[in-house]
Image 1: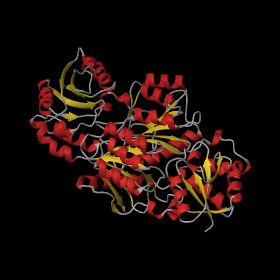
Image 2: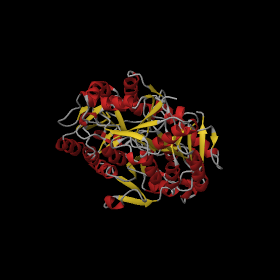
Image 3: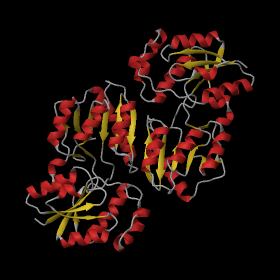
Image 4: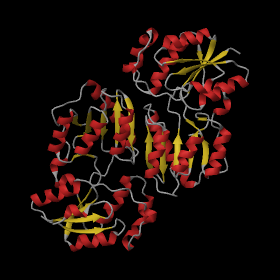
Length: 269
Length: 269
């Protein structure tokens, strides 16, 4: 197997990929994006730290490490392109990045540029197949009729937004859309949903892939902290897209959901 | 002119309506919704305070005061129907209220019930015509080309959501949707947009009437505190629907916008 390059942002996903690569006998090489990835998580793995704008340096590092397949994984704040200090290759990309509206368009520019150098950008689910959410209830609990209706309402809202490359998630309680996630992240969505939800009256978090979303870079993901956020918000459960979203550490998420009395369900909307 | 009943929630709008009614020679009678309206703002005006669930009591008060025209004005949190203590009339309404999904559907049930008693529910703009946002720039500043593009993007997002009776406002900067307002209110939208916006790079708040929105009860509104929130978020201005949204105290809003260097523009989307 060719060496796997991992361009790593923040969160639990990149270290999981490192472990998965090793377990399958692939040698990982990590590019830690400065300010996003925590390099301390990659001790003992070949890695380099680089600012996101030093695109030439990143490409050279990946070539130097003889990577062929690449994955982009982890959280990355949308950079402020006008305050970056790019290298020459970054500078050449900049006009296309500035013209790209929406996270998806930006990721597509980056992926095209990497592939123009002969790399093959693959999805995290190609490396770690059981990251993908399965269909059906994950733990002991399943959505009741009200939750099913709330999930359906959330799906309609996210679909309408997804066509516009907006909308990562939505919270719905008893037919009322409490909150819609745009650029702020799921944690912030859940924090304000806690203030808006009526206690003990159900409610769901729904996360879907946007229409045409670049699945190699930016699938919706949940982890145990999502379960904890949903529990703290007083909602009844989580619905995510089966085959189109990631569950970071499925067993831990299932356990956390059972302990909190929440459902986590993979849906095929 | 018949007596004007004002069913008052929170905020600056109900007192403005009282003044407008008096100025036009109409005698106002105010029902202060308990927990929402500040009764102290209505000293010197005939008024009564009632919980929102005491629908029978509210109807009797309005009849006793010989009101015929009614306006519903001011902010009201969506009530938790299951923890209300309704009177008999409220109890009869409850099944329809519980079945109503979305703020608009709820307001329509209330308006129908009031009109079944012979009241005529009118819009706040019928009482106070110059509340409606005019077309074009309000103060000294106007949107530049980037702001126009951001407004157009916001309009597309709000239209898609408005069809689903969701989405009161949106913030957009350089083509990126920073935040979408669902149930949390514009102030919360602006507070988080401040954390997401790149400083000094423009950005807009857009507020539109939802498709089919019940204009007699719930038009989008801005006031000087909206201007201050937009300024604090580092955005460049506000676009609202001309003829379909309210500006509370137009002169003060215009002055506040000029002082903050922001545009406020009425658009016909």
